Image (cartoon, rainbow, N blue to C red; front, side, top):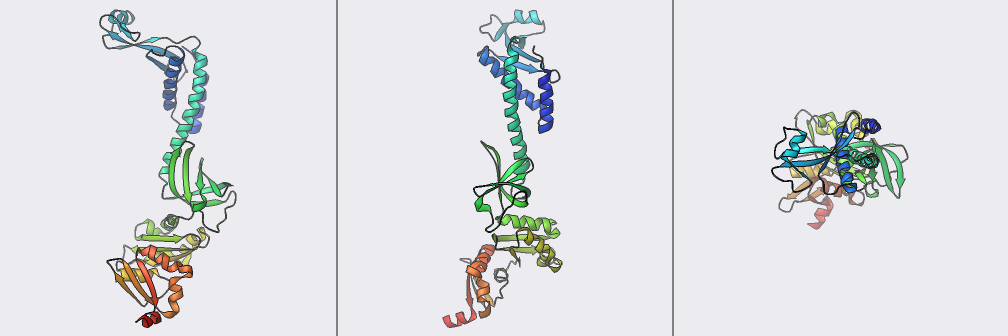
Length: 349
């Protein structure tokens, strides 16, 4: 038997600090000590290790199976030999015989150090993975810690989250120790630990901001049907109401536009078009081209395309700078949209 009260005290402190189960640590340590014993003393012998959770006493036991007749291996014990130890033993029982080596304490100390550090890393990884895997497709808040080669590292709780360059908003700057709301795209465990991948450019960021800021959406009265975004420039979001008495656009905009302004401020003043969703494709497509007026919409359901006619004065507004408004409307609705002015249609005819 090897007494090691210091080991238990250290384990207690570590488990409390890291939030790890002491039983988990002791089981891992016992398994490692079995391997260490076999490696140093008896590779072929069946052994077990027991660590007293209060005193730290370590005992190594040879495990021998009681057999009828002669014992054919070192892992067997005759019934007569077993009953000399305890008359209650029967054939098939396993007898534990203490074989703790005198110099096993040194090996135990080295093994304990390695196992404890390894298990702490694994347990911490598991805790982080469990905590943040539920945060996928949701918003978390982090603090900018460092920027390396265009990558931004945020501190979130007791770990880091990575904002890759392609998930950053064009023109957006990130300063040290500033707080950022980010969208969690993926949480994965790799050789270097748990990696939390985040985004500031994902449409999901805007969706989640609306879900958290607009009570009617959180309550399920107003429903987000679709979101599309060109990060740093413009977002279109289609909403519908499950209650005829609630205006979905008004609920999202808020009094004097205060609700949508809070969300816009969070994404550095990005423009947000709130569209009223409709089951009628013509109405939905016309609304999606906001802020432009629309004269008529002709839909072709077979190839999901639409021909939209707008007033001459509204053509550039409907198409948008570099085609952005038309592009976002097509993404939002899922329809191919061809925009023509009234004069253009007449000339074509």
